[in-house]
Amino acid sequence: MDSHCPHCGADQPDRVERFGLIVQRDPGAVYWKGIRYHRPPGEVETLYHLVRRGRASHLTLAMLTVGEDAETDVAKVRICRLRRWLRSLGGEVTISTERGWGYVLERALDANRR
Image 1 (cartoon, one colour):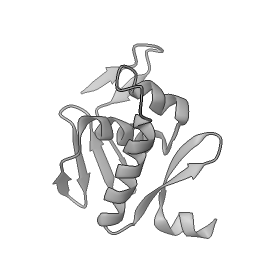
Image 2: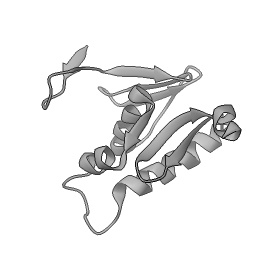
Image 3: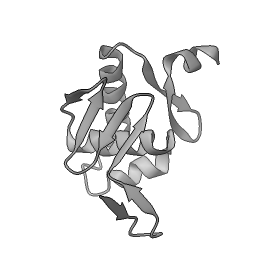
């Protein structure tokens, strides 16, 4: 089932895939090599945006955390936890920082070529 962006009306698929990593929004789930992994809802949403477009800006990720504890940088904490989790799966997929813009989801081989 697809939903629409409340801001621009664009289609937003409930399930996206990149590099074998599948993220499903409703119900929130993450699959890697056919195995379902539990991740907190905020991390699922963050990973969804990275998988859908291959990258996400700092602004996009900050908007996902509106209403949460303003004392901490929630988006950076989520990225840190997702990086650690991806490494625990074998490190085939990584999240790299694009300075001044945001984050990019890459295959580990692509990241090493830079």
